[in-house]
Image (cartoon, rainbow, N blue to C red; front, top):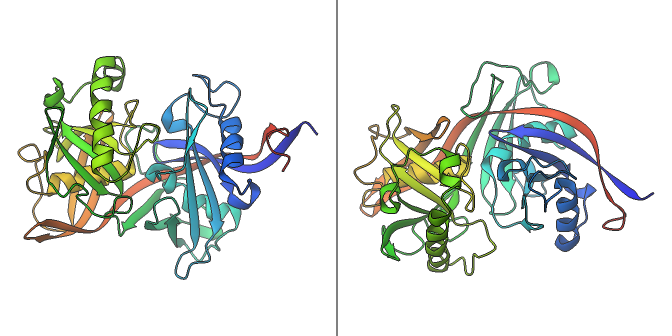
Length: 362
């Protein structure tokens, strides 16, 4: 055999998609695992022409699942962000959109039993240690993908998948405000460095000469913007305790503006070297927390509801994403208890994906 066959499901989770594997069907050591995932995706080519990637950062994501041995946890979810044109894999962050497909995929793989018309699973994000409760529709003992829920950035409607993120504060940096400040000034730009579900460097769009309503394509064409943001991000990463983030996708970047379509705040989200076409699930939680926290760069921009839990609609280039944040106010700001969203997922294909046996013989 010149190729190794690996069983997989190909799924859309939220507004991302990619292959979902059993962790046990892949090499244990991370160096070989990275080589396998690069081959699977076809990283190193703008179209990922020799793999199953889709030529964008939201379509070169990989989920690896296993039944958890931790008490009270059903599924361990290990995430890999594979490069598009770069032949590399970042195992540092997690992905909230791909996580939306973890519950359905785990049930399809038989890692967790279906328990009724609705099945609730507790998922551990291995990369960050975060715990997430997922609610999957399972009428008649099967995962249901048909429904009437629409999410911006995805055509059509599908069955709802509820996700509630628990213990979202400081999972990567150890605290919600890892620099100890509500605002830091880096290279003349005020930023808020925050770790809620995803470490982020957040600024106002007008600090970069933007309206904050630009399309993803317009922003991607602005090479000077990306160079300026990256220089600031590298310093922010050091200040947040993440070390040298030159080759890491975290912290992510968010640029804020006033809402203009009835939401709480508008944001352009960066991954970080390309503009996200919509909004990351984890990023939306961090942006919502930033909007709710007095004294951050979001002050004066957000149109916030009263009380907790608060439904925060974050506007993005193709619509908006709604996050329900359960929080309490403190003299220092706010304490986030949990953040929940309703998203959708769909199984697109299942079978075997092939990799060169010289990379891994299985």
